[in-house]
Amino acid sequence: MTTPNEHADDLALAHRIADAADELTMSRFCAQDLRVETKPDLTPVSDADRGVETLVLDLVAAHRPSDGVLGEEYGERVGTSGRRWVVDPVDGTKNFVRGVPVWATILGLQDESGEVIVAVTSAPSLGRRWWATRGGGAWLREPGRTQPRALHVSAVDDLKNASISFSSQPSWAEAGLGAQWDALMASVWRSRAFGDFWSHLLVAEGAVDLSAEPRLNLHDIAGVALVVTEAGGRFTGLDGVDGPGRGSALATNGLLHDRALALLTP
Image 1 (cartoon, rainbow, N blue to C red):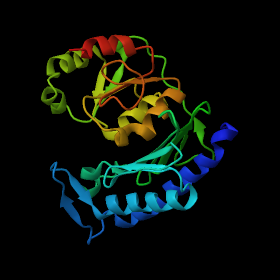
Image 2 (cartoon, helix red, strand yellow):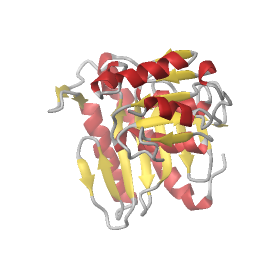
Image 3 (cartoon, helix red, strand yellow):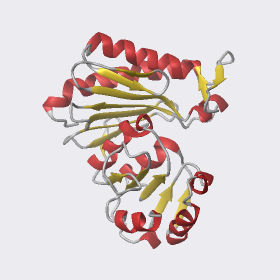
Image 4 (cartoon, rainbow, N blue to C red):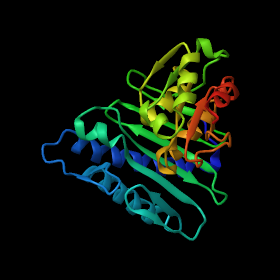
């Protein structure tokens, strides 16, 4: 693994946080006493979600006391450094509470300009962890390999040969983009709903050629988008603006981006 020295310490801390999060989430996954509540937006939250976010807050306070934290469950704790750790403690909570093993802790570190410079997504029930640093490439640790492997997006350059992944097909109609989504789906070779973080990270691996979501929050994607771009892909909102903070997402191998974006534009 090669990473720029300037980000090595922050990446090491991100991995340490992910290790602690993995230990907590795996201890609560399929636990008989797992506590689940419904939030005001009618989405579930478990004691694991809140426990991981508390853990992140505590570890950042201990090791980067001037940095801020933005999380899904407890909002923002403003720091003085201008840097901010963005966390989704359990992305895929609905899967988590039902015993489906597709969920992850997502962590991204923004610098003073708001650019994500370190990203880690850890899915312990899948035995997989993805990470990237700005300028340091994208990497994956997975079962059966003793060393992490460098990630590269695919070379598919025609939508008719492309594989697409997504989270929820009805969400496109709910966003007023049902016709646009249907047009894109009709243009590709294959579609599968791997869902949430995994759809986008499969783009980084080159296993999928594009993925998209009509609505999401920064915490859903801050620790994912950098992995896609460091693997050679492109990550924008549906408005075509690069970055994870656009409220929507289109991740591709870069070669397919403009065509897919044109089909999804209202």
